[in-house]
Length: 286
Image 1 (cartoon, one colour):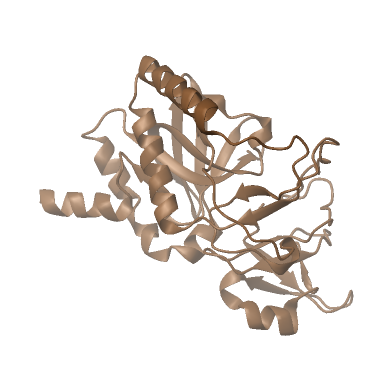
Image 2 (tube, rainbow, N blue to C red):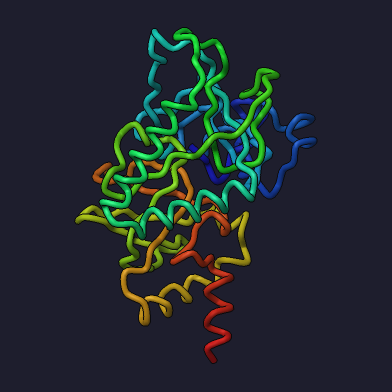
């Protein structure tokens, strides 16, 4: 889970200093901040690592746990005994990201029958083309994320490659998606603000989900912050606008529903247009 800022302190007597991802880079992290970054929640001493990504972010140090009730608390699940493959995070390149968003939009516009026909076609192709593999696979399992790199604590010198990111409609999200990066699709219901947080509510088949744009988004995509009103303007003329976005799935604060946290402006579209595209569309209409 991405954490928007950290507390930097060198010992227990140090009152600590709030540190944002924009205040740090790889060199300063290695020389000064490494092992001295902590969770911002009061009384939580879980250590954090700085991940030089696009966008940059703080994450929980490997094997560290947050206190009960911490905003960033999570349940650590053990690996299945039958799995011997190592999990690593790898980057998603810009062209890959654009392709995933485009494919998800195309799927959202298909009928149920068209989707079933496509599944049958892909299943037949996999049967004919898939290579034979050993049951006990020792190769690393590739876990796609939407960021351009990982912290040194998460790598083991393994060569890695990309594979398709999983796509989910709002109504089929499930517990196993929590904490993972997914491409989520739904119809746009409304756009609103909660303090500095931007929120887009999307839905499908009576299931709703809030897409949240928080501090990490503001830090990494500042030029997109003032463009959300273009979504509201677009919705006045277009019904059933389709949201497609790549982000991290999490439980809402009340744990009553799922949320999708998006980290940067290029990671979501409305009917295939990002916020810059919507702004240009409305400029041409004037």
